[in-house]
Length: 203
Image (cartoon, rainbow, N blue to C red; front, top):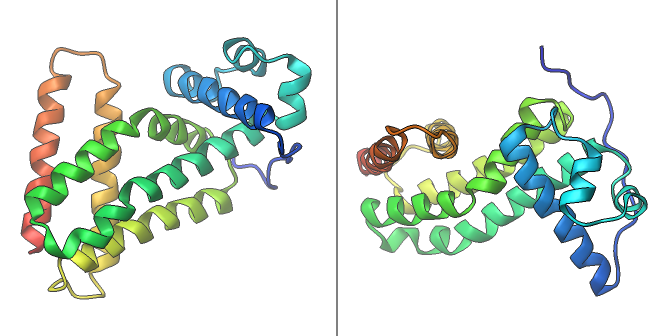
């Protein structure tokens, strides 16, 4: 059973200097790779310190707990998702469903490591239920804006359902891309087509 933390992760010191910000970025990069490949539960703080070439003391100063690292991983993924989709949302009204699907698919693949790590953290209960819902709502809001701009014919009451459906398709792409199997490449191509066909159905 997935356990959900009852309170937010402890917050460490916020880096002000450039080298501090670079160190935090290196820690999050290492944690992203480890969480995505090994899973949140199987990853230790010692492994994060080792892979990021960070002294244990520095790691715990920025992130007192593994849950604090997980919270930062999820938040960073959502921020990168917002940045990646901002231009598409603005231009959606002038693009075809095919163009939108290709841009969105490419963006998801570029974010696949961040997305896989965020999924691992969330599924393991590395963030609180409230934090997970808040970050999920941010992603859903971006997708809902995309659908509303691109397909104004879709009734407002239906937009949240369409956004949730599209988010699940995006999640499936990330999961499939991590599966090392001969069929995975072909499956990803089929998912690209599925996303395009779904978007075309909305128009």
